[in-house]
Image (tube, rainbow, N blue to C red; front, side, top):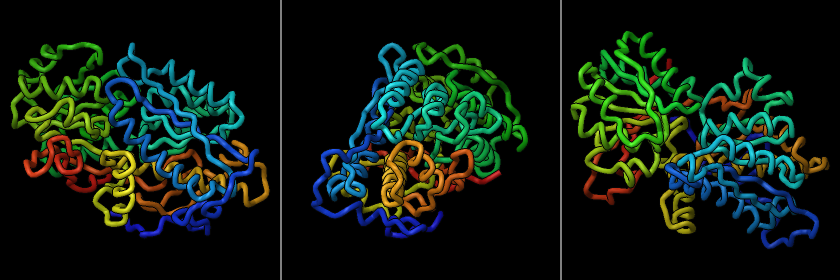
Length: 413
């Protein structure tokens, strides 16, 4: 694990654990800026989205309670890119949200989106507005890959920053785990047709083949379909050692439930961070979810002693336990708040271009370890954490921290 300091502070000198401005300071009437917050609050991933939202809000509320950031009050523009029609994130709604952010000059930065399919729709719009966003959970590497800069970064500068690593590491590192730790010799790969799911499954499959795992087949799930029996029966007939799913929870919950009824319980089954959310317990549940492996594209900070104050305050304020992506959202908000403070103290206008530049220059320590971005906006550290659902009757069955056990860091390629 990456070592972390108990104080969350800027290595460059700006302390963020101690707050912004002076406690009890009054806000100047004309000194306010807005941070937009785009998440998938409608549909299959809504429960995960709320935990992410609460992480960001805790950091912003902390700052405002202490007088704001260099005297600036921080307003929030909450936006939902999920729709009932899509049943999850909706790229068209995400694009609409991005245009809303871009048209409001008070918005100096954004947190989100939660999903890569939304990110692909938003990034070009935010780029042309020079409006930085920090995603706590979207991992498709194309959005920040310089090969696709003309598509996702038409404005030139990096605007899509992450407090997680990408599927260029999440997929391959899990393939390494299948080969080296679980000794899987053959696998069937599924995806859910979304930008995240396809990219993650592609990355896993390519590395699995390099590691000598025989890929017996690849198929695609329709997230809106209700019955995956035909695909699962085909997989059963091929009898692979393992199944890997790239995708999010709309298809994932149904897959987990139906796989339990059709596939051998001894088969290794796993997926990415699209399955690492409370819904794997609350919607899929036991016994179906028992044994499923999943990953996070970040260090596992929930068990770190340095996170316990955050967890205590978060749980008291919002009435639920956080998860690792609540912590990456909290970290993303801290980065933006520190950038606003840095710009204000420099005497430059607190506008989106200057805040973007300050985010790009970030060097800080946090609950997830060092935070520094490369020239494309990607996090310099590349940690992928592995979990497995294991029923523990000593805890509530929806307790993600105790029912989805942390196994360690995935082997790097």
